[in-house]
Image (cartoon, rainbow, N blue to C red; front, side, top):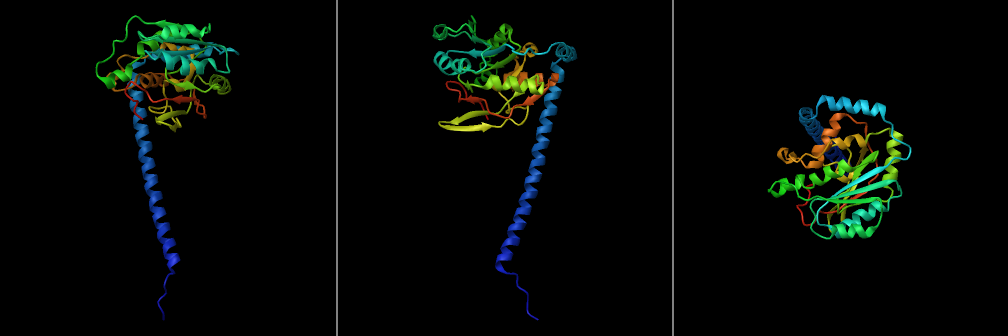
Length: 287
């Protein structure tokens, strides 16, 4: 009786199927490990926030939300902190806000003790919706460059929040830009989903002419940034913490995880609405 030989093509197909099966097992195992890491990080964030956010504040937000319905045509406050970037600020950042299809907005720009021509450049814009305040002192911020980056601008951001009158609040870094229909889309989305806090994907500049998409699939560290959120006015009382660097946290995430702990109805808007440029003359933000 002759020996049965498996055809070469069939052997190749079986070998390939075996490799695919092994790869699927590996991918599944790695996916479970990644999910475990995400869960562990979220638990750590919850623990930190529980030690920082009083229970009374959580209850206060719940009462405020029950008593306050957003108006049909709300005012939106756009808060910008800036330091000696007059040209980029006016030609890119502010220009993108004033091009918004939603017009009922106020733009609050706070200088972190600017010493350049920022004030003169803003004055030339001549739009009554734009307000500029320059702080008399910068910081104080940590001397270590990385820790300084984590909390730089916190004082200016907190001052802008204190001046905000809007029913909704959002932000933009002074060297970045929002897409023209961002506010209109986010307002419609917030109303439809009855959301208190919205975040969205964004484009970020990984290098010259190299744009990557952060899909922002989670309300989590590295998934959201200062300029990719939109929220109801109550959260202006959750301010930037100048001590966030002691936890090795960027100030924006330190603030957002505390907001998350309070329990807003938070939703992800699916479209990218921000172009986040490489930070120049500063330490680049890690990805």
